[in-house]
Length: 352
Image (cartoon, rainbow, N blue to C red):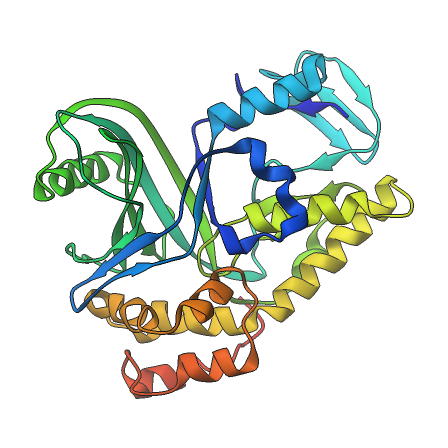
């Protein structure tokens, strides 16, 4: 296997996190990539503060680069942008051509047949002047000003004085106002009583949130031939945008193919993408309620209410393995959004 990366190192500047229950026991091959894990995490809302006893694990791009480079050696090609790509051939920008089975995982393309919102964020790794006293991650702190939609701060404690602080916003558009997000991170740190000694790293991202659409039309529009993976294959959790668990599952599925060839991998990915999209329709319903039924400054109430449910249900939600009873339980009770507006969100139109 040869891994071709357009940038100077694998993974760019990113952190990938997942809940311990997102993966199964036989997916422990991911363990070498994990730099930190915690046995609990915290959520904060105006009317609810709770600690969840579910493990949370994080992978950094630095660790990803190190582990994969050690495993593959000179079969990792960095700073190698691609000029052309076919099912059995890749041509690099410098003219070098490589032949073999091609899997294209270069991120999402335009998807006119799908309706997407966005979870966008900017994060800074900061060094503090004194210990922060956090026992584990804060996955959502929505006690902050909500602005024009659902907003929360996300905090990973790397060590006693080092934090990754991300300002995350669920919005209709994908544009990032980096200066605004940097200022917001600084203001949040001060509100927690933390004094930043230095900013030692920065990362950003825009993740898809699925609302509606026609997945089969999307794949009909996608040219045949090249096998896809990751966000390019529409394999992600509809609500969180997390793609790592789906990437792990796809890797295992490819390894289990009786015949590893371009046509077999392409067919596997297309069928898997369509099936996963169809199975996760309930999540898109919840997303429509969040984006379309909730008033901008009140959308946090959807998640505030959700985090009052049982821990096993919350684990199954993030693992995208909800039972029928889970779905009924999530929708039972006083709705956290206006009832009339919620009714308009129930039916999926199946088109953009």
